Length: 623
Ligand SMILES: NC(=O)C1=CN([C@@H]2O[C@H](COP(=O)(O)OP(=O)(O)OC[C@H]3O[C@@H](n4cnc5c(N)ncnc54)[C@H](O)[C@@H]3O)[C@@H](O)[C@H]2O)C=CC1
Ligand SMILES: O=C(O)C(=O)COP(=O)(O)O
Image (cartoon, rainbow, N blue to C red; front, side, top):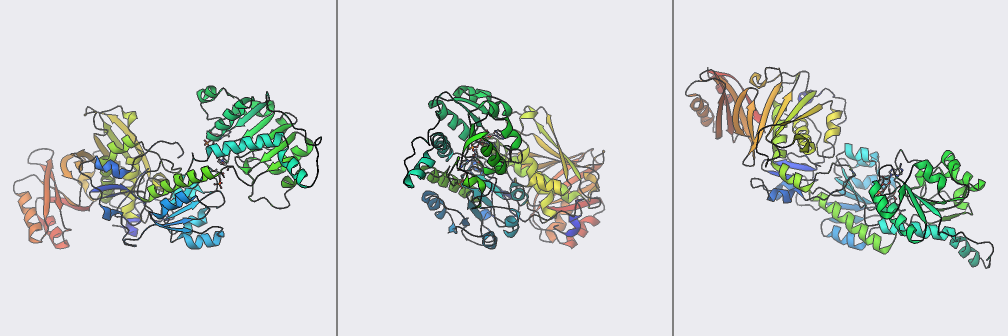
């Protein structure tokens, strides 16, 4: 049914098609989080962190699902190993781990053109801060790139929006270089205060200038930590050990974490106007870009000293030169620059009151080994189809939630596939409502994974898009598909997270009029029974068929012999029936017969079924 006419089901036909790049995949009898391309069907899982377990481990706990290793194979590249491009220097321990998993191509110092030329043959790319991973690169990847690993914290060099649109997972290594960066901040703070770099250069020039390099003391001075995250709080801890008063500004940091270290959280203006030293530890985002500029330098205490091991882009460098020249800023110590390396004629780099290092914050042996292992594990995990604890563009789903939801994930996709096949084209699916019934407190139900799977079930059969947890919401929006959700508490056993999932498609015509409810919506409902997804209701008809393989839905006059007649037509045409279920509203009136078949019936047998006098309508569905 993947046809252009079917594509018209969606109102937005102008949207560019997104190359296939699955993240969580589901096949007939298995669920796997998967990044390998060209699976039969699929789905799946920002910056909050929690621990994850692979869906494959989850599956072991779900009796009826098994992971078939064949599902992980990419038919286009049978038995090939993943190709991992490492574009910047990575620690040996990480490379070893990567080599044990795939073919590793270490190609440093590639030009953007060379990188674009290589990327379409790579499944994963690992970078540090020196490589720009932009939209052109994702386009050049032609859908093969499944994961970008940032071997470090800052992901400002990766176009996350483009990655998401292309269904490419981005993971980083957020913890292994924290101490290195904090120690470097302290190194710059102390070196700047005592003019270590300038005095060293003077001695190397044969001078002995004791009076010129009189420094300032740290004890009792106020340090403002701007960005009280992992690095900022470690800097604060160390600065307190040096006898400094530490204040911090971070709009998102919890007060109790600051209090535990003896740090007061203050406003931005209060921080920069009272501090003797200001150390920057916030990420580069549109909000923090050039947040230190002429206006904010003007608020600083005259003679303030600035340390930056975060990102050069948070400072307007021209404004900093002016602040240094006027003495508003007495000294600065910078590890990072708006452009790296900075232009040779940069006035900033020439400035005598500034101490520089070439982005060395994370560059200790220990941190680089740690980062390499952290990123290699995340990338291998992602290529293996595991949810990553350090994914930055995919929603996180806690392991216990994942474990419980696994069978409902299958149900959600099957219902989505069923719903779209029941719609008869026309004005297209623009709006669906999903009703989750649960025996638990409805607000506790995490529906992101289920919503992504429904989106996948609806969109994939009729378009070139490949949906995974990374791009599900984006793709739905792009296709003009509005999904609203409702969670309803019902009297159902609370040991299961979901009792039933109902999909209501409004403003469409159906190929099967019996699937249209009194309110005019295509309405289907399913449940998980003994771990298997079942269709339990079609509009007002109760049915009970497992949602697997191929299905014929048939509305008929409720009379004896119908199962036999339809069964014989299929049998005569060598179509094996694997189950049948009849649901009716009132005895001897109308019934819906659901017939599961192993083979697709040919046109002749479908015609014959249609000619049975009691059969009023029928539809063939491929799940
Ligand atoms: N020079 C180097 O080699 C290294 C540089 N870094 C840089 O340091 C930054 C911080 O790293 P982590 O502490 O690990 O990250 P983190 O995410 O733990 O901490 C960042 C903190 O900044 C805060 N923040 C966000 N917007 C802010 C704003 N407008 N004002 C004040 N605070 C704000 C966040 O709430 C968060 O608490 C990274 O984003 C990276 O750019 C990190 C490691 C090494
Ligand atoms: O981790 C970070 O954010 C850093 O800035 C370290 O960058 P690098 O990996 O040394 O290029």
